[in-house]
Length: 508
Image 1 (spheres, rainbow, N blue to C red):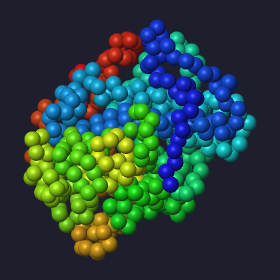
Image 2 (image 1 turned 180 degrees about the vertical axis):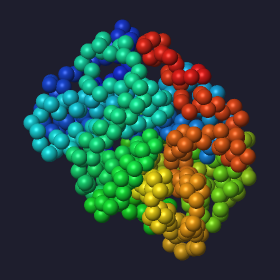
Image 3 (image 1 turned 90 degrees about the vertical axis):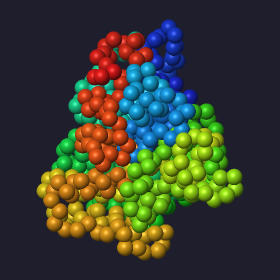
Image 4 (image 1 turned 120 degrees about the vertical axis):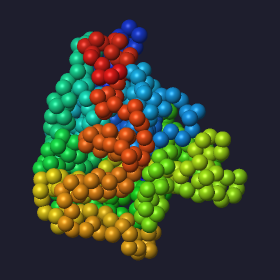
């Protein structure tokens, strides 16, 4: 059952931090927490308001996730008639006026603003378990937004309080990335303590204690704290029964919007709501963005061929792997006739396989309407297993345990829609630490293909020179600059309004 989050008046509290810096041109209405928060239900209304900015065109509906997809080495621009802001992200020639950044940066701070408003408002309400859980949820959402921001931009303004006087923060400066990460970890640890273990009906679009622990594992992995990453991932694995986590039997189940609610593999999902129309809120364009120009499937309209797989990704992925079958679309209808990918997107320069995860089975969304039933998984149980394996390898842990995690994922990949196969085989014993490291990273690349994770892996492992310039590059970019391109540029309009945000990130 879909869970519709109504957009309440309390969202006036969650204005963008930087909209407040230009008080004359962008007047903002303020609603003091003490005038709204009377009950735990009021607090829940405020917390749920943050989700309207996550399931939003500027965030998980297109701008943020498309940026992450194009930045990695798995996707390329197909139709080069698409707006230049997307091509700049993909081609490593973006500047500080890039329109993708200009959209998801303020939206990130609106999520944070909503969370801060809820945390502040909770002080007005008598303590209870429900209040504690909602504070934990608000802290998780704040950490979720900051975790994306700090990985993309490095040093950023860190605001962890309700802004009741915009004038007081109009000259705010950047916070060192290390301090931002410290705030993220503190929020996730608090959330892990107070969030519930489950929600009714197996809801996966709100976080649990298991969700918070999984994100802690990811943060520690990003920071190279391998013991912390392993400990948190192992805690989730050991308590998977409590949280109801497991791998889905059929990999394709994860990407079928008709039955994407409450999936056991989802730890946290961003839920779009069919034909509900609320402006940019609940607007999902990732289906058409990744869909095929002029070509359809039985349950889709044609797409736009914007973010398409680098052809080498398809060509080098063993066809015996069921995950490849699910991840790509390589046959579809052109003028009512089934054709191969060689005829895809005629006149648009994209005769190649396209991404299958978000366009093939998007429910109410038929490919070009900005609406879907997609639940974009932000974290799933397979990734917990992969984090545990990677971290354990780095600390010199048990080979048997490492391989057990990897082979659990591979065993699922051998289930070809209910028909057992013998590929991919279990990982062999006796690999060196370096070889096992490379294997795990490649397993992440395939298992999580197109799910907005690859760029973060490239950055945290400093793989840019290798994956964009190396002999085995899937998507060559000779202009990749490791001194510039691991960070995005801070939005120029923010720098123009507040010189305390200078200097700009290097190279922009």
